[in-house]
Image (cartoon, rainbow, N blue to C red; front, side):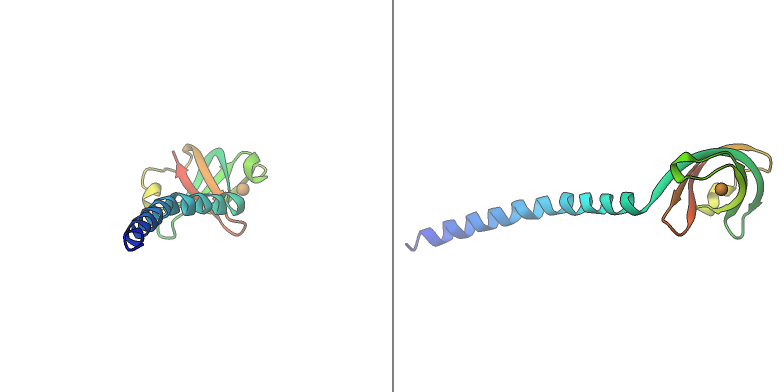
Length: 111
Ligand SMILES: [Cu+2]
């Protein structure tokens, strides 16, 4: 009996490690699911109307964005990183990726 316990401990530790290794991928999977259920994304094209580098926003006259149920309009969007505005110019034609968390729009990519 005395010899059984160490083996049981090793087995338990081994199992513990196996679970520990599975946990990160398991929690990652749930982290991926949470944003996709609450955050919608879409892509659009448009014409730059105005750039506000201080506020980090860009005004775009954009076409319809089906992924976000948005029709064509002119509106102002915040960008994820103000540095994204550096290369933009008024009247430039752009393609952009947009996310919407059911509260705010955010441009995550613009070229
Ligand atoms: Cu819009």
